[in-house]
Length: 499
Image (cartoon, rainbow, N blue to C red; front, top):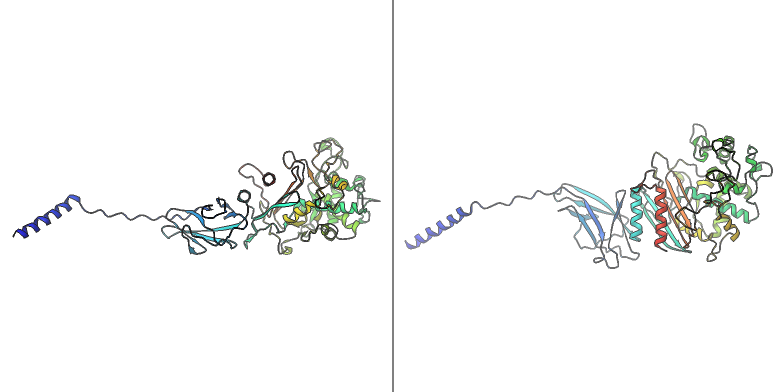
């Protein structure tokens, strides 16, 4: 009886305890997140010895990150931050924090899977050798202006100190860009034409003050119809953009009514383009209150350099590309510079060109305007070329010091006008005396649909550089800069960085 009473009391105590505590709580099930974003991708120095901690920069949907040359890309430990609760796969394999991965391939696919498992996002990671400080700035530039591919080379004296490609030479096939890829040079082609003219000068086959048109002119046998005005134009006038050949006109080299047959996309021969320009020149220039004469002032002319490339052909007896390669570039050991063409004429190591703003990256007849805008080359070759025209004996120049001085001396315009006698920013085929950048350097930029370029030779600190793109943008960046201004500013910064 006593034992029974004890059991009753114990049961009563348990029931009293349950009653006092109430019904046991059941933990609510956590609602799992559908978020699947990649927040950060980086390599930190603690997990990757010899690698400066750096984060990826994004452009055009890709994540780009640079590591020092020689880093073992097959064993890189990434730091990855994603949406809370999400998991990560790299190349379809589950990723665990702190695990080394192989990033030596062209592009790695990183998938972020939401905590709920219902959503996922795929990110493309591009790891390459380079300088994170420089490379992230280029990637930001590419994102601002939607540029698929960029190449940059920097040289100190005659030594290339940095050379790298960014993004894609061919975006559709995700072909990574290198500094050996060929890019269209646009107006940098004018410096190649200038090299040809200066070579003919040094061969004694023409003088810079030779007349171009009419009886006794270099192009006399081409039989252009010319006015008295045109008969006074010299080679020097064309090289310095002082001929006035296009004064009062739109730019005939890029005006379809001049450069194509009527109602057709078939380009007219270079001589027809030149003749149409000669026929259309408007004279006198009453809008400025005076009649323009050759040599009076700076009036940028693409057709002027089409005329110069015809002078090269007529005087040398060779087609323009053959003379450029055989008589000029061969002396420098340059073997992969050419006249470009249309998409179906693209070379194996040449970029694809991407249009923006309604332009057509393949609309320009490059062979017909070769002297003004036809060259394709690489930034590595551009650096080598500059060493042969810098007035420094470290690498023997292909021209005499007198010829080099003529090219890089501001042309003396007769004036008047805004680009008259006070204009000191153009020599012979080269720009000079930028108002705030590239002090002491000769330089030039270029742009046509699908292309934006600049190169700079031998500033006061003996720095040179090139920055070229396979697209051309028409918007401004967050600083209000056009693509040209942004390229100029970045190239100046990069040359200072490596000085």
